[in-house]
Image (cartoon, rainbow, N blue to C red; front, side):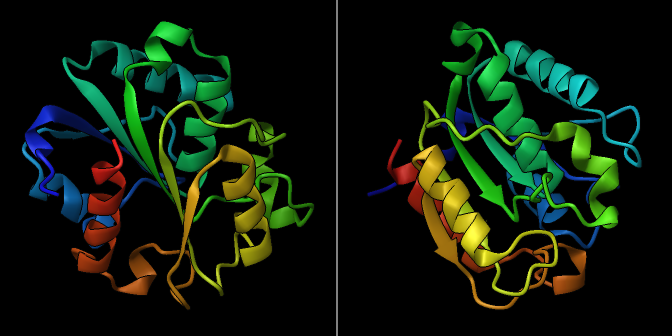
Length: 188
């Protein structure tokens, strides 16, 4: 089945420290004319209210249905926003690609900067979603990523060992990820 990418607005929702030029999210921004990056005021210290508020404004302003493309704490932003946003706004979301969902509840001190996103909502998402997880991600274990996917009613893609699925993974345009995105869009 062919997917008409022009019928959606793609909203890239990066994690902490944004997505540098080498990050697959930045490559995807260049691939889709109808895409934009959600900009945060403070990339170093994510704050759940500010981050979800900006997401709410971006979804409201989008002229078409939105496909959310989240990474890391960007996934927590999407899920937290979905749990609290007005139903009419959430209805504008056609689907969500959720890569490397940071476990914001992890007690390790390295998670302190994102702990204000806890607890992670575990309700079924009202739109099709795909969780993309790596077996050696230091920010979420594969069993926890599977728990998230099951709770959210999302499919899960195990992409093997790709770390946190960020710039360090060297994915570039990440063709395999684009195929996963295409599979998600085919379900919409």
